[in-house]
Length: 359
Ligand SMILES: [Zn+2]
Image (cartoon, rainbow, N blue to C red; front, side):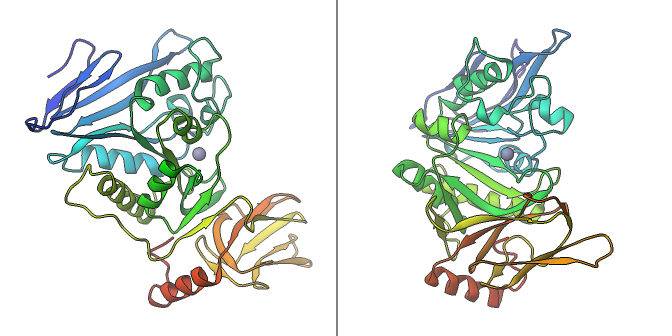
């Protein structure tokens, strides 16, 4: 069925007796047992054409929480797009208790240009939330997304990757001082959680403050689909749906080990003190011990090489991919592990030397 506004709606299940409410957005409504594919106008081009974001709303046949999944707030961060599309279009939702609001590409202008920021307004969409309907271009886009598809939800997952030229192991960023956010972060089941409130204007912070507990999921690098990471993130979504009762058949995962890195604990970007070409000796997710060589930085003739060593024992949450630096450039993001977590990581590496289970 195609609605008057061009939205496609299909019924995939009959509403149960205990069915929930319709999901209502400015152009229409999605009833229990229905899935809608829609484009929602968030801005206009110089030609006066609409700038639309794609949205899939799946309202399960039974009542339950409403969860948003969003990606590409930074237009070149693609891994999350694969996660959101797979949840929306490849999963069977005939027993879903609740509603999924799937937003695979938040920053459509940045996505079209394959760049991080909004190209016309040169703004960071992920510093523009909750936005303003009378503010700058970026904040108007943010307000349309926030008011129509974020605030009506009960919780949310916002998928990102590292900035271009670097890569991250899968981890969550969450304000663990907020009980509701902490529950969501633990349910997503990553090994590493970076605990911080988050900068003002980020989707996760502003949504959480507006009563929609939200975490950021970081995974891999920009401009790529990285299947092992996508699969792990999909497992995280399954675990969240189990935790909140949206899926009765699934169970909450335990990642094997977990470390929550507070803002006070030892974690640091190791930075280059010299310019040059980097020979990185470890991949993301690697365990390095205090004093281990992390990388060398050499000149073009290899006549001088600066060795960078790990200042403490920890795990490389992020590493650079583009192997050229000038002084001050970040080389890797090292987070400290306590003794118990270190033992758990060592045990896991013994039976999984390629670290496939926690890259
Ligand atoms: Zn990002």
